[in-house]
Image (cartoon, rainbow, N blue to C red; front, side, top):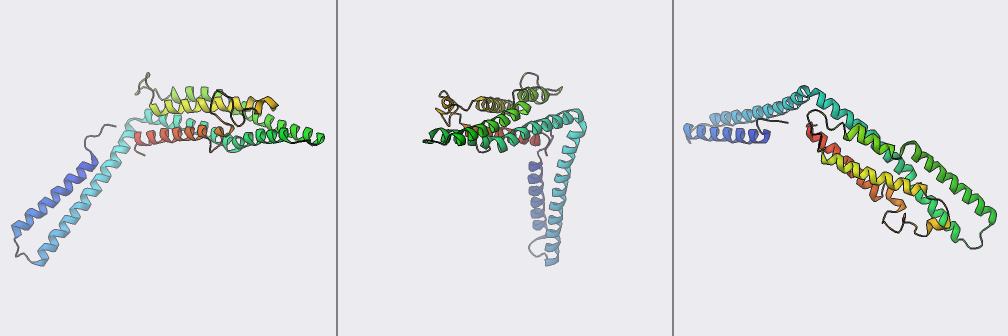
Length: 247
């Protein structure tokens, strides 16, 4: 936002000006001025400082109001895209909160099951069926909202909308690009992890997804590195728009 004066500089120079004025007045009145005159000068100085502070605050509030009023369409688009981003991120949070730890539990339980010596066959079958049922529920949750369509929604409803009439169509803000990359990595990991089958071969590299990366089953949990990176990118986007609109 274009701003003619820097608010802090206005306050500093105004205070210095008042202090200098007070100093000059004290020289004029001389050292023999009575106490009443001194108190009056001090009171005037404090009143002047209060007036300056009030003026600066009012000026800043006016600038914030003027920006939102004179750029109504821009402000509206930004509010809409941030709201959409919030909904997308909440889906990721909900999935990580519930299924992020569950997927780790399913595979760790299966590994323990396969390492059990001389297990009861009935217990083995029932536990295996239970774990496969839980894995099926996780896959259903992914299909209903955590697949690659979520990334497409972000690209269309957030990233592309950020390039409206007053912004570049070539270079979206870096914070949104960072979130896009974090979301892409997160969704990719979610889909790879949840598609794995409960077989002896799938736990050979447990808790890692495969031997070619350091992504683990815990990476998509709330404390996992992939989700934490997504959360950090989300916070950066919010901070950008809060600064953009002086909120």
